[in-house]
Amino acid sequence: MTETTKTHVILLACGSFNPITKGHIQMFERARDYLHKTGRFIVIGGIVSPVHDSYGKPGLVSSRHRLIMCQLAVQSSDWIRVDPWECYQDTWQTTCSVLEHHRDLMKRVTGCILSNVNTPSMTPVIGQPQNESPQPIYQNSNISNKPTAAKILGKVGESLSRICCVRPPMEHFTFVDENANLGTVMRYEEIELRILLLCGSDLLESFCIPGLWNESDMEVIVGEFGIVVLPRDGVDPERIMNHSSILRKYKNNILVVKDDVNHPMSIVSSTKSRLALQHGDGHVVDYLSQPVIDYILKSQLYINASG
Image 1 (cartoon, rainbow, N blue to C red):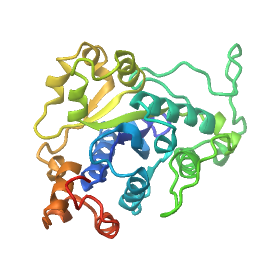
Image 2: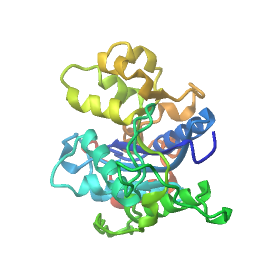
Image 3: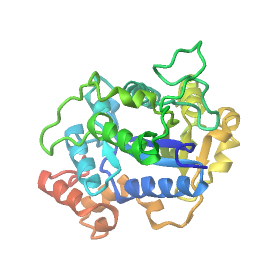
């Protein structure tokens, strides 16, 4: 497959990020490496979306702190960004609504085709009349004027950095203007762009807990978007899928990262990080990046058992 015919992917991770760990960042990196190795996908961006303060999880620190810690954790990455939209809402948002928000935003910003992970969309490119035969956009023979993967990725990447995955200043967050016009040329680039939920197998396992997830939301998350799953703590994603009718139904939309099952980052968690901080455990440097540790100590977060 050529770069322009592969599915272009944005990985979206939702969660508390309380605090964000090295494991979270490695999850993005491992997923990207695996998807590239399949030969079917090109990962062009990653989004970290911290949960709203009203989620109600015990010990959840303010989103102001969590956004800054996430920003510090990804500051050296050229493709992972922090998005504050979820935190800026009036109340807690479901994972489904966060995915839908980013899908709608990407449609408006890029005009790219968004389709199911294993079912290419028949939706025409935005701006193309539906009842007419598609006409070639680049009709002259000048090769340099034709769309290339580099041009497409550059335009999408620019859009991502300017609107979808903002890098807010450390101490001040500006609300994103979703109505900004970032260039209509993107509306004619015929690439397939997907937003996939990135998670660990523990989140996938939670789909099997009766009453925890809204079934219609699960249908949308797995059926319309798709999931990239990283095995954690010895939990087998294949076994999990056999325990849920919805997961079995959309099994082809669930991509399990098959790399080193004993990857050291697989056992890193926010819970272990908080406990290490509370007990002065030096192993915290194995769990959190130094800028995040410095911010936590400066702000006196997680030092007491209550936070």
